[in-house]
Length: 138
Length: 138
Image (cartoon, rainbow over all chains, first blue to last red; front, side, top):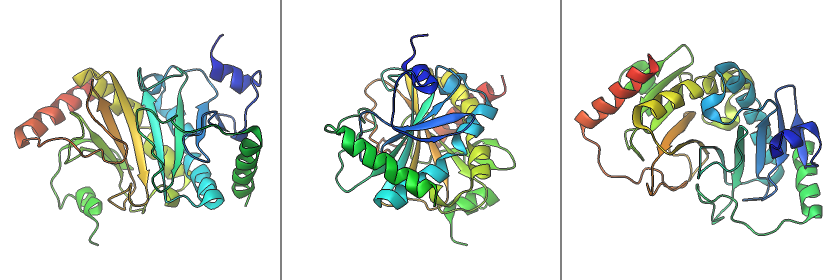
């Protein structure tokens, strides 16, 4: 299987993981649209929203309020978007996932090109990850 | 209660309803960002994503694949976004809901101002509603 998200789920590709349960893992997006931009990835491989069943859909989304609140406490954004991209050109990785994008004043996020921000260093990723995990555990 | 979505849930305000179960109703957005733009609204009043619990979150999102597939069959969009806006200025109605936005070539949808399209007539709303309901029942 050449799916990059399957390799992330299996641990073959290292990531900045902030949460895991039997259905999903949550990691920092490797291209931070904004600080704290998080992906919630189904552990099972499904191409996209059209292919998942209602039970899996429910099991994935049930973790979203908890993680959104952790991001809120961590970085105090003015708001937050949950975004699911389905099919090209919106979707770039064909393994079901959703974006949590904390929003800040004049952050320049665009629905079609959300990976539009500058580089994030390894140290910054670690800091962001640890701050969210800290808030998740509070 | 002056909440417009509570009034929609109770039936005080008429809408183009395409789906209902014990947890949610799905209606056409009164400002169609694109053809088929649908809102999934929690029946219970919660301000936004930060305030719902994991069970309600799961119960709301579990209907999304079914409705997304009905929209896909109805209008054959190139893709589809699910979008949750949380807090001002992203969020305009403070009663938890999510947007399903079918996407078409050069549709001009923007994450911050999705209600940017022209007027939709009552007849067009009825046609859109009926087409989605038809596909939901297939």
